[in-house]
Every structure is written in C-alpha cells, then in structure tokens.
Image 1: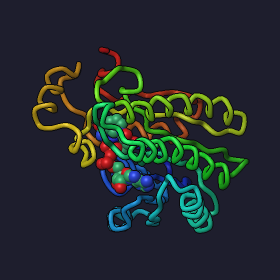
Image 2 (image 1 turned 30 degrees about the vertical axis):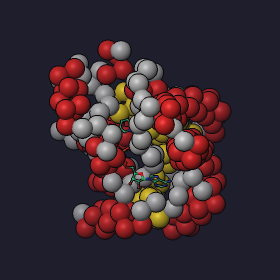
Image 3 (image 1 turned 90 degrees about the horizontal axis):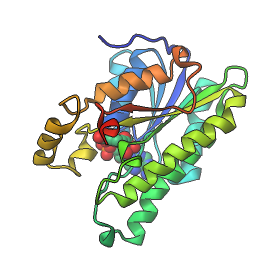
Length: 253
Ligand SMILES: NC(=O)c1ccc[n+]([C@@H]2O[C@H](COP(=O)([O-])OP(=O)(O)OC[C@H]3O[C@@H](n4cnc5c(N)ncnc54)[C@H](O)[C@@H]3O)[C@@H](O)[C@H]2O)c1
C-alpha cells in the first residue's frame, strides 16, 4: 500500500524530474499534495511531467534549467518561489549516468559529470537557502547510490560524484541543522530507468535479479515512497541519513 503522508503545505523543487526517478518522485509528492517545480534540462520532458501532474489534479510548474549552471538553477528557483511564496524542499536528483573504464574518461566527461552531480547539488542547496521560510525550516534530499560505498569497476567518475554527495549530505546536515533544515540522501539500487538502461544490458539486469539479496530489481515507486517519507513531517528528526532503498545491495557488499 502506498504511503499516505500530508505534504499539502509544501512547495518542492525537484531536479532531473523529466523522467525516471525524478518523474516518479514528482508524481508521488504531488499525489501527497505538494506543489512541484519540475526542473530538467529537457524542456519537453519537464513540460510533459508537469502536464501529467496537473491532469491528476496536482499543482506543478515546468522549469527547464541546467543544474550545472548556477545562474540558470537559481533563476528557476526564484521563479518557483515567486509563485508559491517560498521553497520547502529541494530534491537534487539530476545526473548524467555514464559508466566507462577509467582509461576512457575524458576531461570533458569528468567535468560535466561533476558539474551536474556535485556542483548541481551545491546550487540546489543554495536555492533552498535563498527561499526557505526561516520560521518553518526546510529539507534537502540528495541522490546517492550504493556505488558510493563499494568498488564497482568502470564507474570511477559516477562513483566519485556519488561519494561526494554522501559527504555533502553529512556536512550540510551538520551545517544547516541549526537553521531547521534537514539534509538526507537516498541511495537507490538498480532501478531500470531510461538512464540506467543505457548503462546495463538485459543480461546484467538478469544477473542482478539473481544476486540482489531481495532477488528483484528496484521499482521507481520504492524510491518515490522513501522520498515522500523523508520529506514528510513524520521524518522531522531524521537528518544526515543515507537511506538505502536497494534491496540490500550495499549491505551485502
Ligand atoms: N536508476 C538507478 O538504478 C539509480 C541508482 C542509484 C542512484 N540513481 C540516481 O538517481 C537519480 C536519477 O536517476 P535516473 O535513473 O532516474 O536517471 P535518468 O537518466 O533516467 O534521469 C535523469 C534526468 O536528469 C536530467 N538531467 C541530466 N542532466 C541534467 C542537468 N544538467 N540539468 C537538469 N536536468 C538534468 C535528464 O534530462 C533526465 O531527465 C540520479 O542522481 C542517479 O544517479 C539511480
């Protein structure tokens, strides 16, 4: 049964929301009553998700932006805050999913991946700080991964970003906690989203289905439910947590 939390007073800004986990988190949070800023590099995709939310009776604003571009992201946040009066939570979800042997990683790829994943999460935190209501506090949810803790071959650039996101989550939990801002992360495991399907073929997903402790792949909804919980009032004392929603991948090592 789906988690039923009340997010009706919240304005939530989600990056990389045009497809995959970002789209499913947007739909879930909207179904709990939150007003959603659907932010994505792909303008058509974020317009499509905002339309889907509105068709279901929810509230959404499509905001095309590049999270790696601080000016672009902060402008999108200012537009959303102007329409809702504030921003209660930011979900730093956008990422370029790319695996390759270290010899093949170019300067261009590494720069782009770190700019999206690391810089983008920094700018997302700044977006929340610029527009949260000081009397209510706020929340930041980052997207980590089990790869941050385990050595998965051929994922150096991606894993380096996710490791940095785990560190950033802990630093900001300590730094922003006194302001009433909670900072957590989800580490999702093996969800065949459009981005992930570009990394892993059918054989690899079949292998994972046999080896993941819970013997199945992740569903987008597993992650969306965890996201709704972490942004809900029920999670008001959870801060600095890296919540694994991975069927036991990280635990099994
Ligand atoms: N799918 C998994 O199994 C899995 C596992 C662990 C972590 N994650 C993390 O979850 C998040 C979502 O992954 P996904 O699987 O849904 O990926 P996806 O590739 O399907 O979706 C990513 C979205 O981010 C957008 N995006 C990319 N660069 C952007 C930028 N510069 N600015 C704005 N938007 C941008 C893309 O347009 C796309 O809509 C990522 O942070 C990923 O690292 C996913």
